[in-house]
Length: 393
Ligand SMILES: Cc1cc2nc3c(=O)[nH]c(=O)nc-3n(C[C@H](O)[C@H](O)[C@H](O)COP(=O)(O)OP(=O)(O)OC[C@H]3O[C@@H](n4cnc5c(N)ncnc54)[C@H](O)[C@@H]3O)c2cc1C
Image: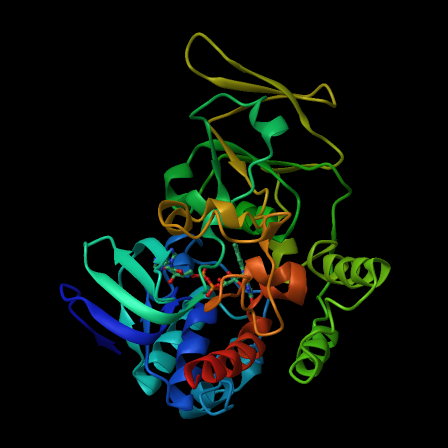
C-alpha cells in the first residue's frame, strides 16, 4: 500500500474517509472502476485499537472484501494450503492478516491521517482539512467511519455509576490490566461474554456480568439468510426502505435473534468457571465509593459486589451528529438526519450532493446488516455506481 506524505494540498475526484472494511472495499472497487480517488484513514484502526487481542469474530470466511471476488478470504487461505474449517472461528488476528494481504494485493492509495474538518464550498467541491493541517479538495466524498463515534452510553445507567470507574468496551481493550482484579460487565450479549472470557484468561479475580434479560443460548448463529438479502439488494437497493414498518421490524427482529439472542458456542466453556458470575434479569441499583476508595455496587436483586472496574458492554447506536469533522465544517447544519441516521438515497448519497455515507449510519435506509462486514461489497458496488455516474457529469 502506498502511504503518501500529506503536506501538499491536493485534489481528487473521490475522497473516501475511513480505512476499515467498508472504506477499503470501496477504495478497491473505485480503483477497479478507474476513478481518481484517495482513501484517508488509518487502516483497520478500530479493529486494532478498539477490539481486544485474542478476540474471535462471529463472521466467517464468506464475508470478504472484494467486489470482483478475486481477493477473497478463501483465496488467501488457498495460498497457504488452508481451508475455512482450518481457521474458523476466525480470530481477530487472522482477519487483520487477511486485510493486510488484501491491501498488499490491491495497493490502494491511502493517507493514514484524520480528517478534522469537512466543508462544502460554493463551487460544489468539498474541502477536507486534515489533522496535520493539509487540505484535500474532492468532487465527491464517501464516509465510511464505522463505529467509533457511536458508542452507546445509556444516560440512566451512567447516572448510577461513579465517574472515572467505568469504561465502554470500545475503550477497555487492554485486559491484562485486570489481572487479580474484579470487574462488573454491564450487558449480556456476545461482546459482554467475549470480554468475560478474555478477562478470565487474563487472570481477573472475579468477573460479574449483569444484564436485564435471560442468559442468551450458546448456539451457532445462522447468517445465511442475511447473505441472500444482501445479494438481492444489489439489484434492488430500495428493498429495505420500501418494506412496511412491520416488515422492517420483522427483519430487525430476525437479525436481533441471531445476533443478540445467541452467543457463540465456543464461548460457553471459556466462561464456565467459578469466578465468572452471571446475574441475568439484574440491573445496578446504586453504587458507593467506600472511604478506602473501594467500589461497592448494589444490584437490584439485593446482591452487593465489590469491584475494581465497571465495563459497559452497551453497544453502539448511530448518531451522525457526533462525527467531529461534520460539526467543525459546514455540513452538519445542512445534513438531513432522522433518529441519528442521515437520510440516504439508493446510492447512499445524502441530501448534500456528492456526500455519500455508508456503514452503521446507513442502517436506517439499507437495513441493520450495515453494522456488519457482510454489507461491505454491496455498499461498494452501489456507491461505486453512484460515484461513477456523478464523476462522469
Ligand atoms: C466487539 C466487536 C466485534 C465485532 N465483530 C464483528 C464480526 O465478527 N463480523 C463483522 O462482520 N463485524 C463485526 N463487528 C462490526 C464491525 O466492526 C463493523 O462492521 C466494521 O468495523 C465497520 O467497518 P467500517 O469500515 O465502517 O469502520 P471501522 O472498521 O470502524 O473503521 C473506521 C475507519 O475510519 C477511520 N476514521 C475515523 N475517523 C476518521 C477521521 N476523522 N478521518 C479519517 N478517518 C477516520 C478510522 O481510522 C478507520 O480506518 C464487530 C464490532 C465490534 C465492536
